[in-house]
Image (cartoon, rainbow, N blue to C red; front, side, top):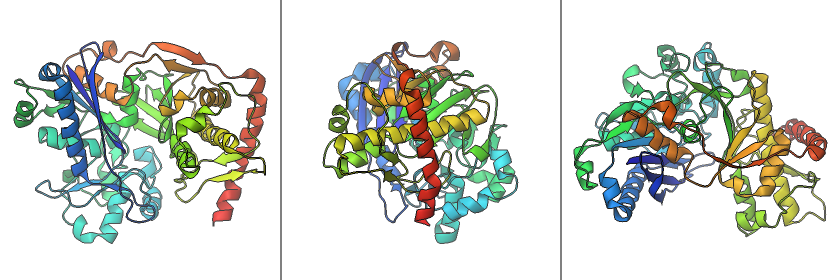
Length: 483
């Protein structure tokens, strides 16, 4: 048996699968997020450990014999979070999360430092780890002086599981301290960020062993043998492992809390000027490019909360098939934006509301606005020479056929829907555990069976292209109105 642990912003998901990847048991545990000031987003790492204990307790109660046969654990996690530890591994302050924008000034300074983009392969976004430490140095110097190790969220969970300070290349690529091409910490980038090599965890590939489950935890879980813990990876890289996306031309789009358009790459091909992320993959000698929008299903969640309704109810009021774009445009910048704008201060807007605008119209506009933002990411990927002919579609937003048909038509790409079953980051983490335990990587990282394909509506393509052009022209005006 193999355990996949996916530590997300809203909580932890644990899946127990057999050697064929078949789901045996699963459990989820929520984790709170605090926002102590505007633009701040934090979590207490103790909640991650408590959540993991609770999830494992559920698995033990549901499938004790399966858990006792555990051979490996894989980890997936939200990227960029700064978990600061002292010399005794005590947590010095709440973890500053990926969607925290307090360090935008520090990010701008670091991004303008000669060589930083060239070595890291990326713009230094406010959500990345390095500018957060510069913010702590400036605003919490007494904390900064005590920092002995900086761990990413999933790696703090690993510390509890194994006692080891280890990370992997895919997660480390989002810190702005990694030479992404060489897959190793960069002394120049660490110097630029006022950090030292000894404050960094040891690096392994995501599919390599990173340590063994502590004996006391193994005994607590009913296990009497060694259990390997794989390197694991950042959430999107591990999700790509879950859907077999690691060859040149493979790609997926994720309609989750945030939105992601990811393309696997055989080589390191940075294009930081496009705000495309260029990161190490969770498997050796492989990279990926990714466009990221900060709010996807979060936009529908916001609308539902505002209208005192549920996202599912709003989506259910739309027809299954599209019949043309809404006259109302929605800019989904509720939390700022990454690709292509790298703008922490931009905010969302409805444009073109009229007296007849109703819930159905607003819902359609929100879905189209998110799709237009993902089209921005596709255009950014195209500008680097990346080519995608079709993509897998995953995430909670794929439950809406209307949204899928809108997205396929706006992207101009067929969307392939996996057959029902376990896939994504939790399964990807379990697959990395299999490889760390000796399984063949290529035999393990297979794509899911495709249940359906949503093709673009050729008869409506021109209308959506025209609407996208109007959408794209709005950013400068909204930006100007906010400054």
